[in-house]
Image 1 (cartoon, rainbow, N blue to C red):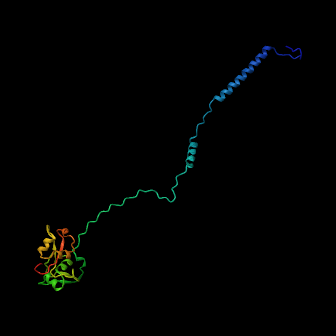
Image 2 (image 1 turned 180 degrees about the vertical axis):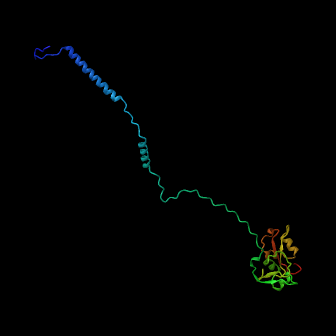
Image 3 (image 1 turned 60 degrees about the horizontal axis):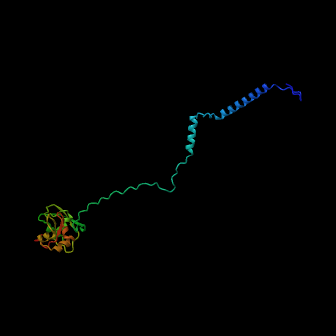
Length: 214
């Protein structure tokens, strides 16, 4: 087919329609291809275990560690002090014993008695008993070595003073009557503030004034 004005031959109409249809199909196919590419999910890469461990180690290294506070002592529960047990009360010594000092020794001879030795050395039977741990014994034997005190128990000490062991059930008043001594003298010599506190087994100094009382 030839254009009369330009003298150019035009293709037949059916061929042009086929070409347009082909172009349209190509355009539609390209659109569908682009849509499919954009809709397809990206492939997830498989993680490398070694690389993952290295990354975890680096992240842990970045975590700061807690530093101890300067100048602060860690809180420690205090240890309670051990319970203190009260020490048993010491048995009180017989009054005057701690003031006795041995001055010399004496060997008992035949015919000696405790009272005769006390008279001879200007002391008392009680002082000799206490210094030699004789308790209330007043019998001495030949050859026995006795320590003799350097001083007196009391300024008014008599050679007839002696040691007596309190018996169960006895009171200080009973002992005063038994040995015919004054209760006040008995308390003063033994430094007893409360007569009711006298107990069995306690040693007392009896301030006798004569051989008869002893």
